[in-house]
Length: 295
Image (cartoon, rainbow, N blue to C red):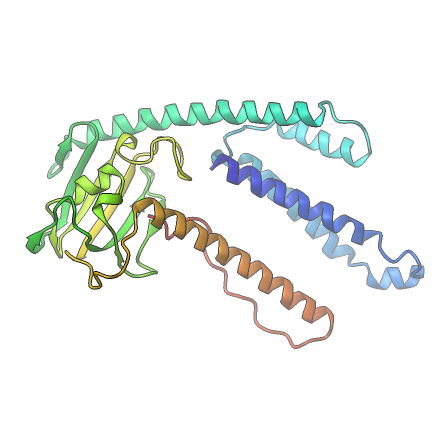
């Protein structure tokens, strides 16, 4: 999450730098031509929007590093004026790496503390079943019937994954049910599904020790909450390769990133056509970014 936030910030900066030469393009144009062509109002709005983007990126809690906004503004002004940076490139890179490492450690510790406290309190709630004390709990949301899953099953399931605060980080509701091998999932997910019957729906509460810990693209040491429904105790197509939980997470996040990229490309193509007098097409419908389909 820290790396992704920094990537977003650098991408926006790169966009501005790449666009900068265009502002001084066509030096042979007459002043009247420039006056008629220069989109002054648009440039002002784009400049403000870019500053807003930087501010939102820097204030994002997932970025980990709490930047000093006043000094960021100072650095932008001095950089634009051609003044030297207070750090060399090598010093800057090391400082950022040290800050990221420190922020990652603090976030990991805070999330672990929250996970331990949540499971301790949750175990006292009505209808909560404890599989491993302080590590794995569940409640039954809907009863099922028929044969039960075992630790080597490959069921067809629907799922929705959330963090403690209720933020959804993944769901199969848009893509349809998935076939997943319990031999290749995180321990908490596999153990939490064992014994489920067809049609049954459970809510799993998984400690990071039985989830992704500090690995992967999710926040470090995040407690995960999964609503899982068994559509079929066995995959409808036994020849279809079974996927792991991590593979589904990785695939879903890549799909989400590709959707964002495709939309950006479509918007750019439409803008080029408008500038050339081409046929106008309705703007692409905005989709929610982020790991909305991840497991």
